Length: 442
Image (cartoon, rainbow, N blue to C red):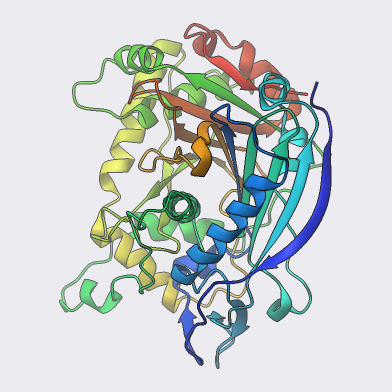
């Protein structure tokens, strides 16, 4: 049974074509605000059955990664400061770090016994050096299972990319490895100019998003001694449809809205709240709202607080929670997001906070497909995503379900304090749907 990972080497992989000298990429206000977080993706692939020598697929993937990096000069660059002290990327072809590893046993033996500490062995990360100019902002780990299977781990600083961009990076790599052109090429351009939002002298700022960010900036982060763990639950299309129907909502709702409400109500019950619910914010991709192409590379995830819901009846509370989340999603419009960006650009924020360091956060990754085929017939069977570090009240990430499970299927990755994670899995509101446990509490 797979139990250990053996690290073989760490390399620097550079692009096959040099970037023109003197090229820099500035970073946006949304980028700067996420600089204290990092992202980890772990993607699992099952081979086609064709016998490959250990190390063969790693060599091929390393070569296709090098070719793919020619389209991502920002990824292989290094951080430096501009004249006013803000981070920017110098595109100097310094490359990214690639860790090569082997795992005992097979992928099929590894997955049924998955837990957080075990999975994080498959995705290498290094915190920023005291000399950031020499620090790689992206890391890739290629882990071959000795008896079949592959795991690709990608980690990056949130300052450069959100989870959508990280998944797009992986998709571009898969396209190149299959000998295709990149279907959704990356776009490295600034966010829309904020002056477009307030040319009208009678312009009134939409303050809801601004108030939420302002309430967290400068607020002390709760560094509790409690240990956090991550559980992952799979909801089939039928389960999600049943959850959406239970909301009895008079308009269209998304799987994210239904599942976010489900976990919100359940966790509040676990914490002993009878009338109200725990404080929660949601995190959504604003590319479509801002009219940006799906290939926009950078940060475009925005957080907003969900307003309080009261009541003791759990089913009625669930319906109200869905309504509250849906209302907040509807209010996150172009003007509100642009006003937030303008405020962040002009605010004197010396130390950006961690948006997942205070209230419970529920993030949606519904708009991306993290499942794609790599060369030699390596097909995706499972994906995990982490936005680290998680402090405060915890975090829930809703991802699309694996191929073949239907368009409504979802995976929920829940990071909470250990004692709460155990109780959450036993809560009857969630257990009535009988979700599949994909990652358990150790």
